[in-house]
Length: 69
Image 1 (spheres, rainbow, N blue to C red):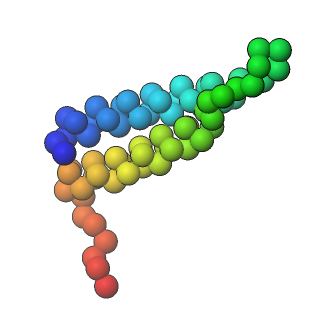
Image 2: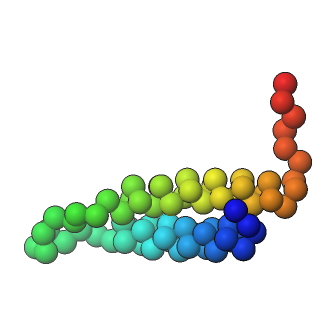
């Protein structure tokens, strides 16, 4: 994956994590029915994907990696 694609995906995943965090923190409204989208779980998945993309970005930029033992 190129640097441009990695940065674009990282920005999209970050936006998704922020949006899902905002939606997940809103108080429940029982009169409107059950909340069907698991926003907190989506936030955690987006954060995990963001972490993997940051590691990939570091590898693309040539940061030294831990040597294998």
